[in-house]
Image 1 (cartoon, rainbow, N blue to C red):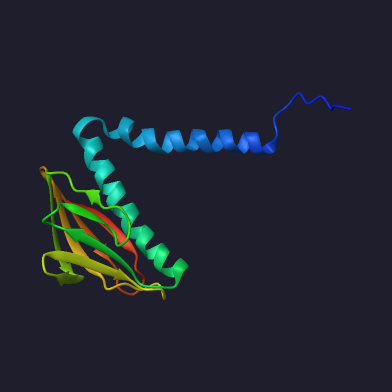
Image 2 (spheres, rainbow, N blue to C red):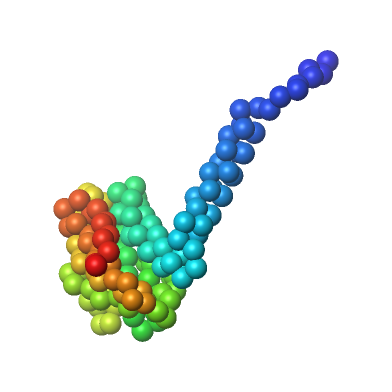
Length: 145
């Protein structure tokens, strides 16, 4: 006997909700900021996401995770993963962290701490200060007016 079903399963509804929320998450920043600002927002969101992910990975894997910036290659990322390009309009300067030649590294520890760092990010005519708290490995960003 076949049961006739005239509705959606919970799994189908969850998949649809996930797809809708993913679309809203990706599209909303572009709509709200528009034009050049959307490139700034997209870069900053990606940069912050990668830093926060490095912290989460360190705790989850129980080992040190390295976030690095390669000025010569104009890339950033988590060691062992694909690097992300830094737009030509972006200038990043850092204090704290660790310098290995020209490379700038921030280490996230499995106990939830980090080496800490202060970065200044300039994108066109706008500037932001980014801080990585060494005790809590939290990442904060504020625009410099």
